[in-house]
Amino acid sequence: MSEPAISIKHLLGLEGVSRQDIQTLLDTGFSFREVLDRPIKKVPTLTGINVVNLFFESSTRTRISFELAEKRLSADVTNFAASASSLNKGEGLKDTIQNIHAMRMDAVVMRHPAPGSTRQLSQFVDAVVINAGDGTHEHPTQGLLDMMSLQERFGHLKGLKIGIIGDIAHSRVALSNIFGLITMGAEIKVCGPGHLIPPYISDLGVSINCDVDEVLEWADAVNVLRIQRERMGEGIIPSVREYRNRFGITNERLSKHRKEIVILHPGPINRGVEIDSDVADGDQAVILDQVLNGVAVRMSVLFHLLGSRLSEGEA
Amino acid sequence: MWERVLVKKVKATLMDATGMEQTVTRLAHEIIERHPDLASLALVGIQRRGEFLARRIVEAIRRHTASEVKFGTVDVTFHRDDFRTRLPAPRVGPTKIAFGVDDLHIVLVDDVLFTGRTVRAAMNSLMDFGRPASIELAVLVDRGYRELPIQADYVGYSRPTSVNEQIHVHVVDVDGTDEVLLMEYGE
Image (cartoon, rainbow over all chains, first blue to last red):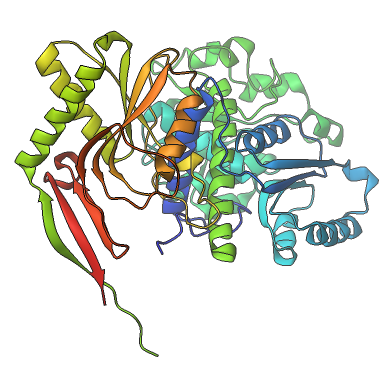
């Protein structure tokens, strides 16, 4: 019997995932993109497979994207949403694990505020675990869809110069982008308010530059992170206006550079804060491509992880 | 415990490059004969080698009639019924159908017809694009052993095989040479 297409059993993060696995997930993602352009956007691949979406933290687009990916693969979908505040985190996760185990789920897609929670889950359940965001740790499918959008635009990832701008310290999007893109041979500069860039980040092979204009001059593409307004109360950022003036991506700022810089944003967008409306809606932004690629690459992840699991257990 | 080592050897060459060219031309003629209205015809190759065979049939039709027949490819990986028992193919080829399939007469093209499961999957995949007027099947080699009630309308070469035999179709675009080999597996 031939080797599985990918070597990972779960998708807990992009840290440590091989270049080959990432490329396979992206390539199959492009195949699913084609399915999404068909009149009937559904294939029977995962018929009879049960997937549960466990969201302990609020999410609209990631949850919908996963649900669409599952439904377009013909899987049976169960949704479970709970606000983090209603659960004692430790006890809640333990209960969850036991429940999933008892329900014989084939795959679990989980978002949880505690970093490492999906890894813990994967150790105790006999199901494929997919991380949909674990606190400030990783959001691997976001990293994959960002890479897919970059590959679509540039045709390759190796050697690309990518700026990541915003609150690096609290961003799982940044971390997954860094792990994935460095593995694929891209160069990364992170940029943002100094106190929101953890000093250890340079150990991951990225460089730090707090001057957004210098980063724009250097970069082929920038990933603009959402400024999490819910954190404003904690005094992390003095004011929205100050942030916009120093780090906001505006047409005025972009027009200083003669090249076209591709703009990514994980959404939801704070228009007029980290990015201006005319930039977000402009030609160099691939934000809506990212949304479409998100569904496709999540189909790819489910397809590969469930495919190798089933062939192992039931063949 | 002794490990069984399976050796694969060439038992016979069923077609060489010239033979393949002749067969492809004959298939093209049979298709033309049954489809006087080439405007409503489309050839769809099943990934991977079916694509190249379909391309050649389209080319042969052009040579003989000077008309361009619609051409597409279909990859059946996502429609296969053995997803649970076999590993998914690492490489998923492109499905490219750049025309509306509604009311067209479609000829699916594949290299080898065996169980019929790939053809079943390809038909399901085609139905996702619309409602063709009809679907026919053209294959280079029919090796028997059907598991579904599927038959080819155009057959290049019919060769009943045994279970320890395999048919390998090589096309110059993928394998560097045009030939059809009968392979045998033994210990």
